[in-house]
Image 1: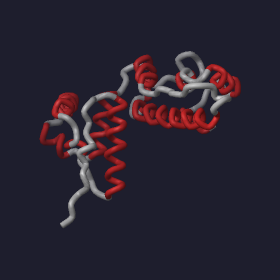
Image 2 (image 1 turned 30 degrees about the vertical axis):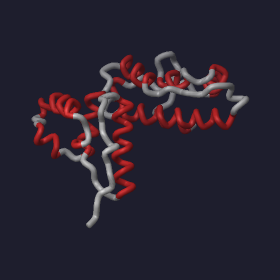
Image 3 (image 1 turned 180 degrees about the vertical axis):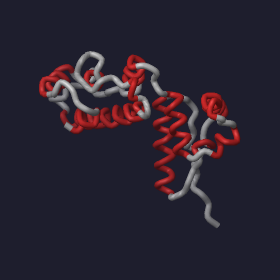
Image 4 (image 1 turned 45 degrees about the horizontal axis):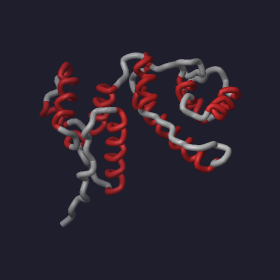
Amino acid sequence: MYQQPDHRHIQLKLLDVASVIEFIFESNHYQQMHDVSVKMSTKMTPDIVDILIAFGQQKGLTKMVFFQQDNEEIQKLLQKVLRPASKLEFEKVLILNTPFTFKGSPADHPVNFYRALMKYRRTFMDVFEFLAAKNSSNLPRVNNKPKGLISIFLRPLPKGYAGNINAELCSSYATMHEFIEE
């Protein structure tokens, strides 16, 4: 008889952006790896379930309906609950959830710096995409002005490196993806 691999490690215990992104990744990774389905609605604490149901009650969401939701609907609900309500809040949440960790000088440790930069870039885009979903009115502009997304992206990087990038950039981009790919 087939026994589904253990999935107890997939559990949403905190309702914050970093935890939710990790939860979605772990769920998707497990499902792809084992070619099985895991209902996200059953993999979160009762407190989080209650918050999500309360948030969705205006649209008729009940406990019974909640547990019948597919993973895409659960993910949309999680995004809706955590969606920043202003450009300032968007900036704060993005900064809080995208640390750049590198000690030393990029010139002295170029390989380690590059790895740290690539990790930061991926984390930044994951958080940005999560927060930006159906939230275009609260997106900061994609420019290098003080509250722009490019400035937010460059802020934690070493000053010399960020300054060199800033000097070579256009003043604005249509999308964050366009900036990141350049």
